Length: 190
Image 1 (cartoon, rainbow, N blue to C red):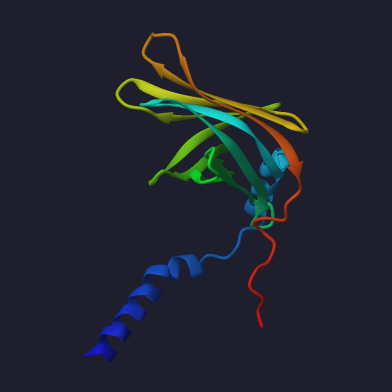
Image 2: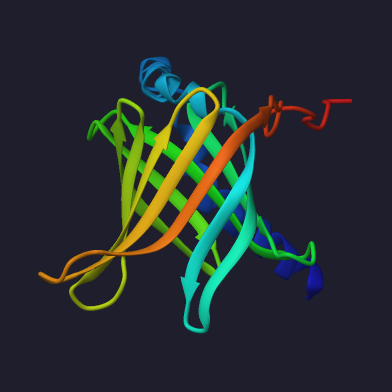
């Protein structure tokens, strides 16, 4: 019984993943992704600084860190955000992947944070980016980042209908060094 169940699971997995294995890499598509992600190289490295967010119980101040690097031969950008509370505990941790779709000519941010995940349109600016997430009926949260060689400022604003936007987040980070993350240290073949 167990053996036939195991064979069925293996066959099911093989059949469900067949389209991925059947597709050959598209060098032109990968090159287009890499070319579109290349302008974001200024984000690569380790960053640290002060941040605050407005919570239900009031303003929370933290030390925010980011580590960012290219992955998949530079065709995507991987980001990890981590906020430390005053006592040194981790109060927030997020993973993001910025990608570009050559078919639509659009960037997106795939994000995992606080038990949620989503894909959000990302608009590049000459000195940063803007992205938005839904925040309830008729409301959004817009994040706007301005990044120079050594400084990264990002604000979050809640926008609801015609009311003026309300700032609910800000981080001011300084670039503290390079990182080989996430591409460094792959498992070797042997």
